[in-house]
Image (tube, rainbow, N blue to C red; front, side, top):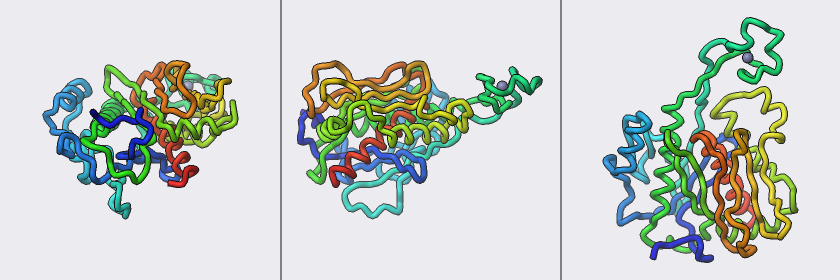
Length: 296
Ligand SMILES: [Zn+2]
């Protein structure tokens, strides 16, 4: 049987985190990890080929412990400076994906329309998104999470697995769901009810600024737009998260989980891979904080 986080004492084979100083999503993968005896996704694997075809991508590097992993040059960079004997460290830099492409068509001819212009956020500039780059990033984390979901055997018990993730980040489909392990679920129960988990909100805001640039309307009141809180009334550690979008976020799946046991979460109205990455930054910050508080 494949190892699963739904068994409570699953040793850790990988972890996701958030580097707040560099605004990068981080991963650590146990150096003993293999999937069917391999540590590589071949470039002609069906999942690779379909993403390349659907998202107009040109190359893929699937060697897990190589210098980089992912599409079009590799978006996940191996942190060569790490000296961790147990886990290999990876960084996912978040490039600016929305760049200036001209003047705002709604307010550039009339400065009085500038303030409060919803189209440009008051900048007077039209911006467009580099969707190919979005798909390269989304496809990279999607395949990375997919590979890590099927280890051959449990890693030696250095620490407990905190989370399982299922990510899709293609042109057709974007989403992020998974399971919070027992350590995360227990940590969430310990948080004051309805209190904002500002470190998660700040990570998501920082990730959005990296990917989409400054946004006058959102940056003025980030706490209106980024939300993370344990807000069930049954002491169940029920985490709800939302980010800018059409009620975009993650929520617990079902209502009858046992407090302190692993529980599944699912996404709501995730429209694109940028929202996946923003939510992933928040999840990374959460996992880092749990590690810090549990002392691992
Ligand atoms: Zn405008």
